Image (cartoon, one colour):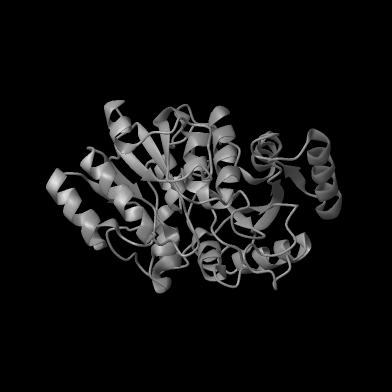
Length: 350
């Protein structure tokens, strides 16, 4: 799958910043690929990029319209279809991370055929994986898990991977969602797998490796989410993580979109994730808490981090604001074999 850059990030008419996490994630980690944004109204989320129409974007050299929104349910809204078709007619390819396939929408499929555009459904693989074996694999693995959805699991994994690579450690970022795949250039959209094969897909994503190698695996969902707990559990089993990093937004009081489901305590989250992970790795343990403090003042951030350390006794960090140095120090000091350094690091994201 080779998606041509630069990208025009499609934001549609969404107003909730959480629903723009695909576009914002690509912009944060691959800004060199992002040349503009395409919004259907001035009230839509604004990423600070220049606004383009598809024709203007094509004239400016952009190659692919990336659907940068991830609304609840992963559907392509009917009111977006004309905009996507306009991009195809202007000469752009289209990449989508939605559950809905682009080619299943007749107007998009027909336009792509007429104008010889390529359609990329990054959430859909080529076929089912094998059923999980539960066999212990060589190498080391870290999985990010969440108190809730959209709390920074991808950002925490990317920050930890980047710090490992910076230190010369052999490491790979393993993307499990559409945004991570668009950032890294590969991976498995784990929530699009058939449920019986999801743990097997996680095994295939992080295969046997050398003793000092780290796979840093992007988590999905939350064990406490009424809709998405299943994919979280399958990832915990299939990844066989040695280390867990729990991700949290300290400003939330309930599961996003589910006001009748108050957030569990951090202690409850740690205990539940460790218990689930130990089915396939008896030594799995939570090593740190990643906080999403975006929008907080420095004082608010420092207070939240300190409170989290006091509550859990674990390292607390913000992947963007403070970096992942302390977590990596812990991994290398306590969870890595003696010869962990490698002269040539691996991984798509540095």
